[in-house]
Image 1 (tube, rainbow, N blue to C red):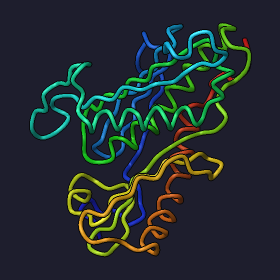
Image 2 (image 1 turned 90 degrees about the vertical axis):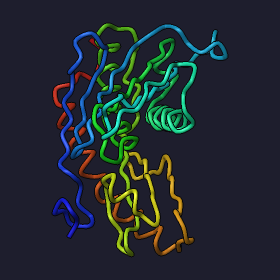
Image 3 (image 1 turned 180 degrees about the vertical axis):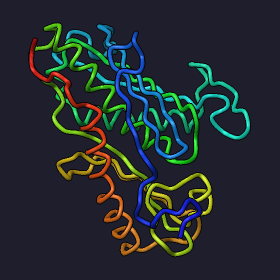
Image 4 (image 1 turned 45 degrees about the vertical axis):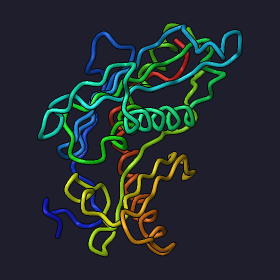
Length: 243
């Protein structure tokens, strides 16, 4: 039994609330246990310079751990002085969301996703991806409802979950305490179609086996189905056809 009473393959309680920021074109607050992430989507016509004049849109992401998201205060990172961890996570979020979108259908618009961790207890990057998809979908509906795009650009749902090997047992959706003692830490990003978008897996000490990897993948894949359902519930009533 885990410290919070969950079964090894059980998610923490998860909720996603859409439309939490009245100013943003899309927004969602995801609460995954004690990990809470606010995701906001901003629509802009400012594409990256290397996409100027092209026939596709773009999706990028920024990630921030707010100062008291953790037990001790974390100094704020300025936009020009981002840590390697932050840079890695925001690139991961961007890759995940672009994999779920027909960027040509999004043209000529760009969407900037801001994922701000309000409270952290493990799994912040996976929660950010799962919540950001909902905020992104709301932004797409905003564009579609104003006839700023001609068709629904999202091609699949995308969600993410962590898994790990702790004291020889496969656990899903690790808390910070579990993650800090895991022999293997893995993050799985997947489309609802069953296609893999990204796998991050690393041993913290001794190498692990393919059997370990397959067991973590199998357990994580089952729980992703729960996250897709939670996303769908948050997106009920969203208009996905031109206005």
